[in-house]
Picture 1: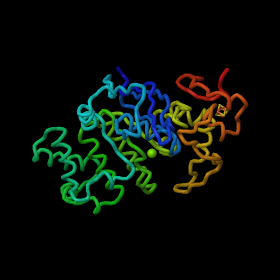
Picture 2: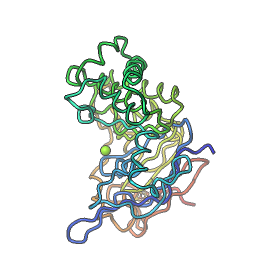
Picture 3: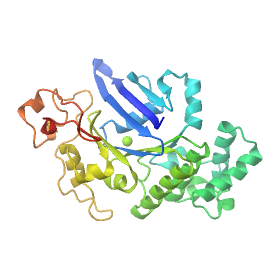
Picture 4: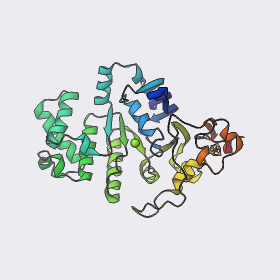
Length: 323
Ligand code: SF4
Ligand code: MG
């Protein structure tokens, strides 16, 4: 089977005070092939991070709950596993990289300790073996003086170096899937490119797949094979990177593309999308993007369009593209 991850009909809701229900992820289907890098794109509040947290089963419950769907990793339904089995999957099959490595690294332990600790725990290595492997992993992620770095503490490293350490930790378990949530957002532009290159290099070396969560289509263009654009807890467009950039369909994707910074580091919104993502407990009745869409027609306010394949491997949820 070529599919590594198969997400079907995923719904993750949050039950709020006063009986309100926030449908943060509201019926999402997608797959990731072995070796593929898939980007999930959208503004904050679009549901992309909740989707990735659902895959890792890290949704805090209550108030959150995965109410429907299945998430299969290499054929195994993660939603059917016990908490203990799921911890094993997180340690062995899924590697994670987050935006701010300082919060995921323990400030009181050396870098070497933090890498060898995962190896001892998940790979059942001896202390000596794990220490040697930690040095190798640090060399692999670009520390030529790894023998010294193992003895340093997180605060002694720069943001980019800390993210390299996080990548080393993520790869230490030889994961099938690497989930990276805004991995470069906190970094300088020049460092961003290096970290993205490193992620792709590691993906290839370890023969894993990447689920990349980002709000930045520039990052997507750099590393992804395929893109899913989310809005209001649903997928609104899905295509290969080339197709998405050259044959953009959904008005929301058009708006996102026009908001890409044109010069390095300069946030020049050429055609910013007016308004904000509606809160997940108050989606409009029709198309969830309708209140912000300049093409909105009468029926857009009446009912929500389906996600349809309008060209080969290109899906879009918008009445403008229905026959
Ligand atoms: Fe805009 Fe209507 Fe398309 Fe929604 S369905 S994106 S409101 S044109
Ligand atoms: Mg997020």
